Image (cartoon, rainbow, N blue to C red; front, side, top):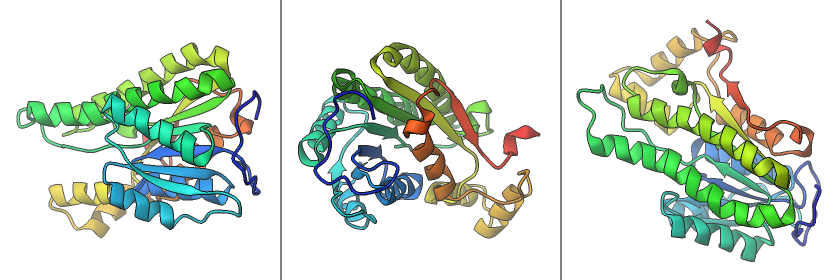
Length: 267
């Protein structure tokens, strides 16, 4: 790491030893896998989720290395004050902040003629406003220390997906947001990139199968057949990509969207 960022007390071992990472929507799925990945690589981790109890339970179960810590934080990412409080708590209790992963998300799928304004506002609010509020709060810490990493979670749905006008718009918006932050924050030693997962086994994708009135296993099998590698993604596949973009090895990569989809978007 460069700059004069504050280190956590225990250095531990691993690629992210000495770093403090805040992951939103981290009580389950991709967020939890990401928090666990950073923990295994030596980081102290702030697990943020709308449900404070779930966040605390997730934090308690992380595979921390010696000297690292974890906390659970209840946070509505679309609330600017809550986002600021989450960042301030991470700094106060874990000793700093070096990486922000904007993963929090929801779906409210429906065809356009059935989609309500609330469906639209909820999805745009959590994904786009949430990423904005969290990044704005984090840069207050990142800029003075002249080092920081922001990784935003987009999706292959950004390219368009039937029944997801709200989600697709939000996820493509994340890509534009990412490029703009890269331009604005790059001079301060901060990179900003996005990861766009394809189909990943989560509660959210299982809910999609239910909405389509399909058996979950059949839904997964059919989706796997659409990928070049003939398998569906696991949360750990996405976590590995996020951890890479947050590391020193990726210091010359910024403003990019990495599609982690098993080749689904190649065809």
